[in-house]
Length: 301
Image (cartoon, one colour):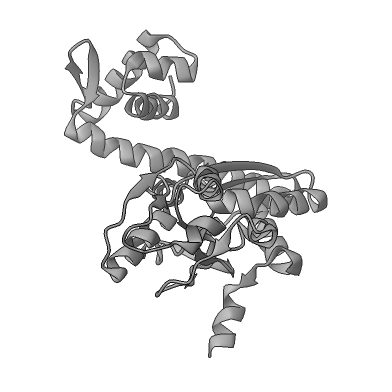
């Protein structure tokens, strides 16, 4: 078994929490997973897993090693894509990750437009929470991320390429809006890890209120609950503009809103040629709403 296969076995074991789960994901035998991890442990001279009842768990050293294993695998995949893209960018691949709202609002039209122009480029999209997409970029598991502002520790390790408008407003259905009180009306929250959820909790802190909260599992669920009259929610205006136009939702004025939270298009510092094709396409197509970060900085100065 190659070193890459051994690393993959350890990563899958860490993610699934069991030898069986890792074997099922990789479509190999459980003994193959066990042998791979034993070989890695022998190679570095440190135990990576311990017995935990009927299963196994990572040792502290194993948990540390897994983070490096993810980066190594991500870089290996990126190296392959970079080499292939250098030879033939229009028949390469791009790995893209986006937070949920951006994945629903911006990505479909952008990727459809790009595929029309470059049908040979294979696109891989992962939609997840803010807490998930940034680590993917840090581990080189994706080439591009569409989300809010990148975390401070990533800003020197990645490149912000473009921004797109995103305005957060408080909305509710007309009956709820008519009786809205910040401290007593139910506020609808996104799932843990959502950037919009973080903005909502920060806004509540600024308002110094502790209203009833109802947590739902996705952007779509929160919007549907607001339309149904279960409460109010802070949401991207662009994402609910059709419901605002139809009168199913109304914007509710509250101190501290609207909030300007533009989407950021962020790449690796040395992106693949196929990734560059996608970045240039997004910036060059005005209908898609992206502005190059260099143009934004120039306008600000």
